[in-house]
Length: 124
Image (tube, rainbow, N blue to C red; front, top):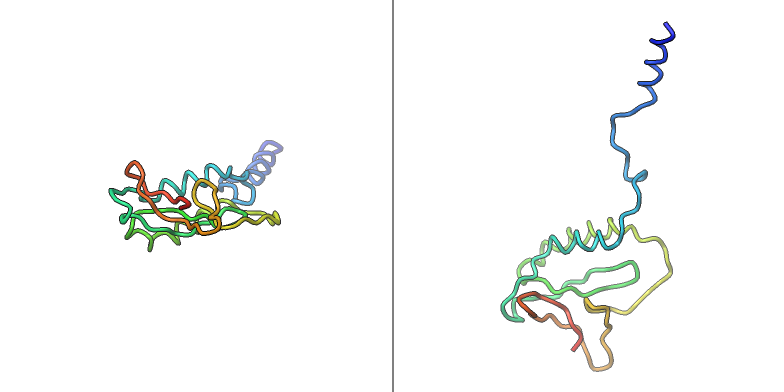
């Protein structure tokens, strides 16, 4: 009888359900970024093949260059990225930056270019 009660108690204390995202360890920001990058089409032949979209890290906007015509799919991908980052309230802030982390200075702007057949944002 004791064995039967032990088995019932053991089964009641274990779960076959996966752990919730609350119990999951935090995801490294580089993993979130890599996952976002894997969903983006950045192919190009000329700069006109590229358009800018606004992404965000935990402190401010980052302009990304993606293949023109794919920008309508970007908001859902950006949302998944932001959820993955799960930014805490850090109190940080930065100006809008290009993909390399450079803000536009006086008389400059962030533009989309095609470099080595890949859309990239740069300050010009």
